[in-house]
Length: 273
Image (cartoon, rainbow, N blue to C red; front, side, top):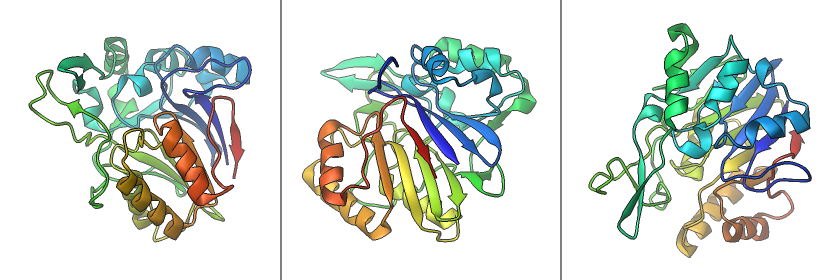
């Protein structure tokens, strides 16, 4: 299988960077797009990388924030037979609250409209684990079990900040390879360790070979980082590729704590497993 980072905060060469994430996954003979970024970098980066968005067979939405769903219209315009997977909560209004000011961070209206135009048979709401094939699956909602992980920010379901948002729509994609599981995460709002534990449960305890995506450790304190590192050492992944919302300091701590298997992600990077 092969994964190309199509959109990320960091970008290599002529590619555009933006605060967002999109991964192009080729596995089991299928073309899967995992998230779409904000929508500004997706199409130009795909052109530079020689990736045809019209060949997208499956679009997986890790959660409903704007920086993962903004490119939906561009994808659906090109990929007419596409199957879209996401938790029902991806379409709900979402806010962040800083210094008393609310910011709408949910799916853009253009993306909501594009999903509304999609035939019902092509839209799959994921409220439990789903297998896309014998070796590819989606976690569905992820149990929150660790005591040290949280959604990673001041997220709310209302602009007044009265209803905290646990981001229950957060999900991950996993692929079985002969050497172990490759796990793709959007922002890991459910917690990176919670996510990897859920994937291993669904895959009969298979080892985690690699994890790639946003880990949302930007605001993680020392205690959370130490416990996250301890859990990852026990899981022993060969490759850890932090992207997007992980945070530079957290990514550096992961690299220092886990060694050369950690590679900081950037748009244009291709990984073969």
